Amino acid sequence: MSLWEYANPAKFMALSGRILPTLTIGAAVLLFGGLIWGFFGTPADYKQGSTVKIIFLHVPTALMAINAWIMMLVASLIWLVRRHHVSALAAKAAAPIGMTMTLIALATGAIWGKPMWGTYWAWDPRLTSFMILLVFYFGYLALWEAIEDKDTAADLTSILCIVGSVFALLSRYAVNFWSQGLHQGASLSLDKEQHVDNAFYFPLLVCIGGMVLLFITLVLVRTRTEIRARRLGALRAREV
Image 1 (cartoon, rainbow, N blue to C red):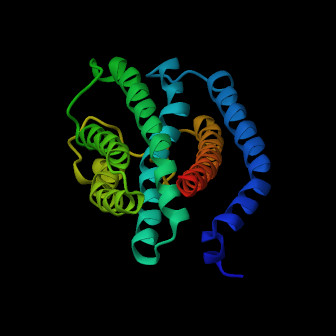
Image 2: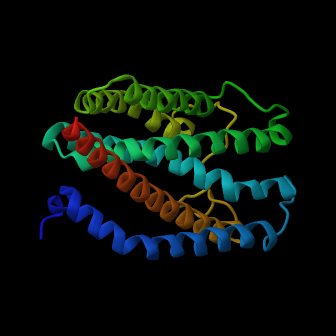
């Protein structure tokens, strides 16, 4: 069985309908369990106090804000190369979710940054690239709405997605590129001396797992909605 078979809307709808209940339960269990564990089952940091616990919301949303755009990039490339409508609709479906993740990451980062840096915002390389990424999310969604022909909209938004991927990667690796920035290094690392203490590390992994499942669940739900909307539009066009 080829993966490309699920580019067929009917097969995609059937498969996604079967796995959505499991994904929803998994997302809820991991996310709520991880957040409760993180906020109520971990000690206060010796330096940051209880403020550090915002990491359990900030880091997962920041990771998904970037990875959502990367997922949109892959889907957009599939659309440009193979012209599968499901991939274009999946990219469109992921955009508002990624934008929301970006907004949450920026807001929680500002709250976390105030006691650490003495300010809610600084033109740090990672923060600046993250803000530009948010602008690209807004532009991507606006472009979809501005163009009436859906295939043309898919083409142009795919090109925009390719361009915006530069800032998605900068958001991920800015700390490595510019060591003089205020933003701390990666919270998760294969190097035990770099990542956060295990008391925070394991509940953080659970929160990230829950956020990943939540993202997949929401993308599937929104893609299914986009497919239904496209079908409804086709039926109405036939009636006219």
